[in-house]
Amino acid sequence: MEDKDELTINEDKDIDKDIDKETDDEKEDYSKFCYMCRRTEKQAGKLIYMPPNIYICPECMQKTFDTINKDQSFEEMCNQMDLMSMNRGFLFDMGNKKGTAKKDKSKKKEEELPPIDIKKVPAPHIIKEKLDEYIVGQEYAKKVISVGVYNHYKRVATGTMDEIEIEKSNMLMIGPTGSGKTYLVKTLAKLLDVPLAITDATSLTEAGYIGDDIESVVSKLLAAADNDVKKAERGIIFIDEIDKIAKKKNTTNRDVSGESVQQGLLKLLEGSEVEVPVGANSKNAMVPLTTVNTRNILFICGGAFPDLENIIKERLTKQALIGFNSDLKDKYDNDPEILSKVTMDDLKTFGMIPEFLGRMPIIFTLQGLTKDMLVKVLKEPKNAILKQYQKLLALDEVELIFDDDALEAIAERAIEKKTGARALRAIIEEFMLDIMYEIPKDDNIGRVTITRDYIEKTGGPVIEMRGM
Image (tube, rainbow, N blue to C red; front, side):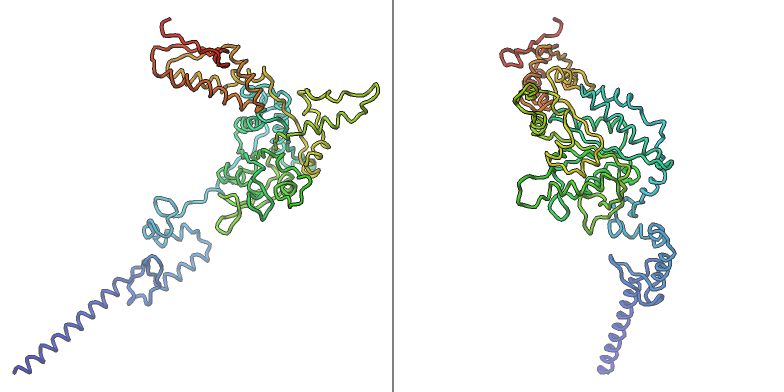
């Protein structure tokens, strides 16, 4: 009897093991199901594994491929597969809160971008009037750039209306440091409300070398236009420090940042379709590319061109130094308008190649700032430096006044530094430091007057209390 009981118990244990095994198999089967149709592996056949921990049956996978072949959009395919809920924080999370791929609105923007209305392009005198509010002096430069920009956007607006095609008018501005070249272009782009890219030619190198590629200047304009290609193709590119890519003289090394960069810029200046990276300055496998046509992009180049004055002087004093018609050797040493006498030959001697200069039909110069001009820069523009400091102290209910002699003293010190209008800020920061530090200590101070003695460090500012 005992043997029979033991046998019965063993059989019962085996049966329980088989039941447990079947239950585990069923659990395993039900843990694997198609994410689209919700069928188990027993019902749909062998499931296909996809990360992260997703199973899809062959039938649903085939339906997906058929959908793709019918040119269905990626977003619609994601909606059909219900991947929005599946991939929160995983595969398709591109920063959208819902987990779906972001819509590409660039095509819609390109289609909706209206053409330029020629009647709405501001006339040259209107552009110059706006520039006068922000920029002191440089009357000739403001007139040239106003006419050039007006004609350029008329060209963009008309396109190819008839057999007469208007050529693009790129500009080259020459002026000493601190004369307002960059500020002029910034103000112009702000008034016209067009995309503007400002880049330095010093960082550009020949393709294949360390540095920015030539196309990076267009990439910056594309970024300024929010990656809208059509909008970028109407913008302005300002290449500063263009004199730094002049052809090097007496060099035995390969000139990768000089003449070769000028040659690389030729196709951009004239107008051509170039492939540029989106969201980066250099091309690589991880960055998408887009095509931008530079035909309607206005290029403005600027540079200080140091030592160009000596080249001009040498050309002007080539006449014989003996005779009735001879010129004195130092005749042009103190000529403030020496840069206005520049010619193409002078720029070629400086190191600019003829092909580059040929694509810059408009060449104009800016004057070095004189003492009177610096005084006007201090107080006349809408955002003048003095007005900025007066506003800062007005927040503390203190009135700030500058004597005329003090303004002249500041201008004289700026001329000594030979950095143009940039020196003004540094000088004012220096003597305003103590005032900005001490004024908030005493609430009874009502007015501060800056004198020439304070600028020259022979005295102090005049401080008046409230109610006096």
